[in-house]
Length: 369
Image 1 (cartoon, one colour):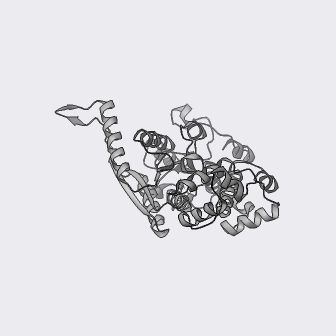
Image 2: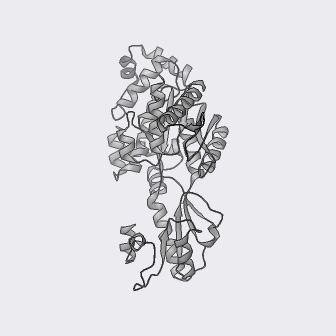
Image 3: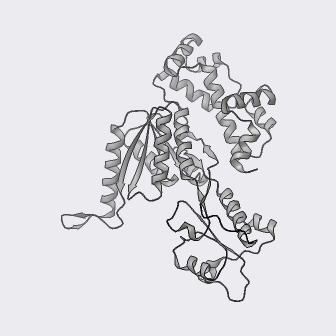
């Protein structure tokens, strides 16, 4: 946001440093807030006639009071379902809270898209109780309550069909789910593949099993909010419908880096592919790595995944290409070279055949033009 403000020659002030009150000696032209439209300071800004834009995660009944720029929770849910379906998961799951809060839209889109893709969505809802529960007339200690929650999670997860893809509503809770699943003797990602939301690199990379996560477009939200505020400052009427900013994509790490295979030979071959994705592997090399003949490996892949070994290695390379497009500023030719494609032209053709868009269009659509 600071860079965008400098481009517009805006001087930013942080209202929190003034206790949320407008400084009386400054000519404030507009405000971008993360307060709900009914909160005290937001209402004060509106009463003073200051053009105000809200950034947030979910809709509010009083969003008509000010333009709202929101993370697209429905698009995030659809993207998560597609991520699991691309890995051939037939069962996916989500844990929500009662009351739902902002995650209802996320889950509903996740479950609907799963059904469209031939997957079964499983839901567990936990009570969101702000105060300790009561046991035998006394409060249940936090540690005991935490253990009870873990045991209930483990019982539910263990009973689900395997393999299963589990979406968490945030990165921290996703890491916790990985730990609880491993503690119950379930393998991540072979039995339970876990996907977070937020792509906090410190949390994701430092997890015991590096965590795959949906990368939200925080920069896109900030830019949309600033563009909206500029229009208000210029005297244009406000849009009373929220503007939604979709996520940038899924950053795949080890927690979902798995196809829902059942044959041990296929599983070992997949792991070898993923660990050597930037090498120019042949099917014969992959077969030797798991100590079987090429013919036996091909038959195992077609029986378990319904496609061949090279097709799977190509898919994995293109998934890695998507990560490079989102996370680096490498040129298309550099990405092609890093993944050992024969030429940038062939790389672009293979990418377009798989994703129905070019690498450049994919990057621009998810990172902003």
